[in-house]
Image 1 (cartoon, chains in turn brown, purple):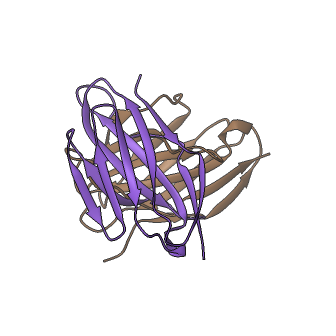
Image 2: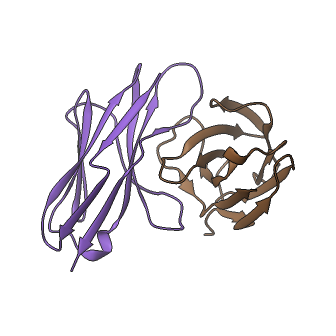
Amino acid sequence: ETGVTQSPTHLIKTRGQQVTLRCSSQSGHNTVSWYQQALGQGPQFIFQYYREEENGRGNFPPRFSGLQFPNYSSELNVNALELDDSALYLCASSVNRAVNEKLFFGSGTQLSVL
Amino acid sequence: EDQVTQSPEALRLQEGESSSLNCSYTVSGLRGLFWYRQDPGKGPEFLFTLYSAGEEKEKERLKATLTKKESFLHITAPKPEDSATYLCAVQASGGGADGLTFGKGTHLIIQP
């Protein structure tokens, strides 16, 4: 059984650029969530996708968007990058959206915005 | 707005020295309270879910308890490999996002 994998592991971008982060969910999981973790903080919920549709969103602006594909892999897109977007971006998958009992997290993508 | 506050921010213990981590929360309606462990450079790893006041769960040297306002993670006779950041999170019932609200975590160091 493969776990949650994220790519790339590290990324450096310039303010104003756009970035796409990728995630492969754990086998058999149809729900994926994305979290942003700033240094020294707990993860913050960005949004959740279930069967290719966004079904929950945290307090993040529209320039944060996502996709979930039929094979349940997922992308997080961030437009017009700002310095404060520098953080660890975590993808987490779960068996289904009804019970977020056990989230399986990837190791994250460390994004630095200069 | 849901809030989670963890204390202490950091804790240094000697191997074998038992202690407790605190998680205070305010939430409109609690669907579940979660404990995760996070090692440096890794994503959080699930430990426990608690659903109602009075509930307790155990795993090896860890025991989590829940009241209506807070949760404790008790660590008995810890070993150096228990060193990590421990995160507490809540999920609210009812409408809105299904995401978890996390605290900032307690950074635990166990010295041999």
